[in-house]
Image (cartoon, rainbow, N blue to C red; front, top):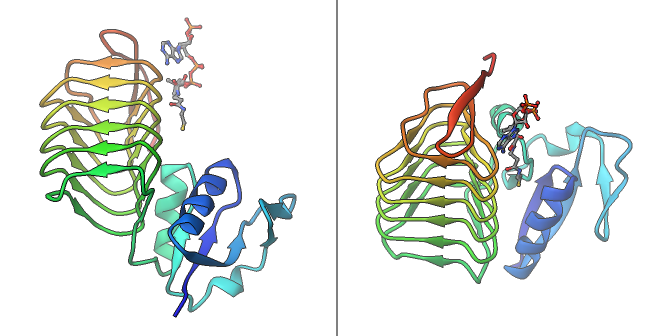
Length: 203
Ligand SMILES: CC(C)(COP(=O)(O)OP(=O)(O)OC[C@H]1O[C@@H](n2cnc3c(N)ncnc32)[C@H](O)[C@@H]1OP(=O)(O)O)[C@@H](O)C(=O)NCCC(=O)NCCS
């Protein structure tokens, strides 16, 4: 029996998700996006009829925005699987929820816990005992040392490094290339080396 997946989202992030799903042998049942200006993605037509998602149980949220992945996952049912690129190296002791995408070249070491609907982007490195909560995005080439906690909805930017034992607060953003050496509170943006708060994010 062929495995099928409905993809919600038709932007650049969704292209990568679709190609990983294809590589893993999934049939793309449909791609949905609310943006009526987007009519195709890769070789697929894009549906704009949200009714077509009702009742589907294998919806994968291929949205780069952490907030949008959360809000859509509250509206529809979710795929109960993860899309993990075959080139990712993942310790046998990693625990995953569902709806996560792990892209090419990722390394996840021992005893890491990953929640639901996270994006672990290309060549990110997550070291031992990290805890990644729901709706997190770890960007390409970001590196988390051991025992880092990334709380719900936080975004670690491209090429950022996070020192061991640090906690990144809920819905906070770590800027591209930042070096985080201290805990980051909820709902802030930090940049630089050492990373410092430059703004608050309204809830
Ligand atoms: C940190 C970030 C979220 C800030 O975005 P923003 O809120 O729109 O902020 P602005 O672009 O207005 O920048 C505000 C200030 O911070 C500086 N700044 C922005 N990003 C920075 C970064 N990554 N490192 C150092 N300084 C940065 C800007 O130069 C600007 O400085 P100024 O006030 O002296 O001119 C964004 O620049 C960033 O790095 N996003 C991560 C992108 C990413 O990882 N993409 C990968 C997706 S897969």
